[in-house]
Length: 73
Image (cartoon, rainbow, N blue to C red; front, side, top):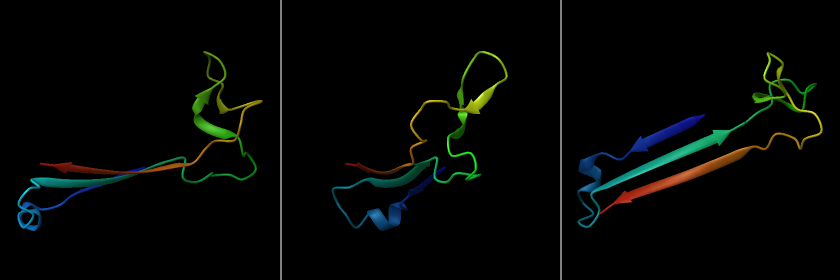
């Protein structure tokens, strides 16, 4: 899940040194769809076949949230 916002030039023009500001928020695995399968992750694969989405002997899927700020001068 990713959400990004670019501040309008009219708003940034008051800051004489800054030419642009971008903010973004990214969430990876923000929720578990089914609590009965705590280690299920559709991005994981166990083999080269069609059997994917279930981890065995692995740590639980980590939730990560990233906030990014980009300032252009």
